[in-house]
Length: 498
Image (cartoon, rainbow, N blue to C red; front, side, top):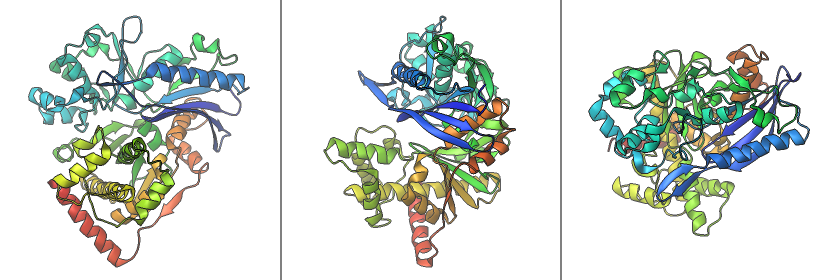
């Protein structure tokens, strides 16, 4: 084990992957990005898949390069990824085809089909997960309905971080926080809901044994250790496998008066609680209960997030309009306020071929002016996201009986100063932005806990606070501005109701 406490975090997002070295000196983390490569869907004959073998090749190369460059053998390595997606393995542990991407359209109609078999009340009382057609449960149901032979041939299902942890260690296990995104976990017992799966007709035998964050899976597999001299004793550690679980674990001063927004392709807006909230009102509002690090539950709602901007920019680039993010945000700031307000979680935004056209069509449908040009489109998206955040926070206060006084935004989206300020203004609450690297820090923090370098989550959050700079955004104080935001919020609620 390294004397300094060196760890490697594999942080896999839906649009990019990073290999990060974290050195912990007993008080602070120092991060170094070792490698970065793109991720995204691969379309094959109309279906969307993940190129997991390509990701694995690049991860192996990054690890080997770190070893060749004289990097000190790390005490541990951990993997976090996006939620809900999975791989199926045969009895030998080999892949049965390439994993599907959660935006693949084969799950259309699956929530309605499942609701005809199991009431939504029963499903929610057991799993506590919001209905989204991307959920693992609906993906498996789509395979079963199509008589997909990969499902009948499967011996094991591994969620995405579990797959890469298996390839790193040779151990097949299901990490608790990522399992909780599947809609197949009993939220109260924190075990696989095997009885429910059997009733639906899905094979419970393929589910792996569950482990909690901080569990040591084993040393680096000899296949890898032989290629990276000195790494034989490096431990593969199950961290908060869901990237949001890792991110929230690293939020300084997250308490009962705070809400979090893990901001990226998706925005996960929620609070940390001790037990799942499974009552009828939570089900009606379609909130989700996901497992957290340290035995916590993240009561939250998935919001579309920066996906709207990312896909709009992709459309503009296809047309030959190359605009950087700073220019995009500058144009948005200069655009007229509150002209077009949309529901960012409308179904047509899940996987459109043309996001800008989808936004225009949505505006026509709900009788809002169609935004024209980069600035108005982005302004529309950001204001609508901020208003959606306010709606979620109001609902969280209702569900928990808490007063949310501070909003803590982490992840890549916390660098978006315009969205941070719009969020503070829309919600009438101060926003604390950072850390940007919350997911990687949470990943590294759990490894440090697992190897005895940190006493627990609270000590880890203090170490993170001592390692980063946080920024604060106060609501704009002018009364006229508050009136304008209230009018915009009333319009937003009408749009959502419609």
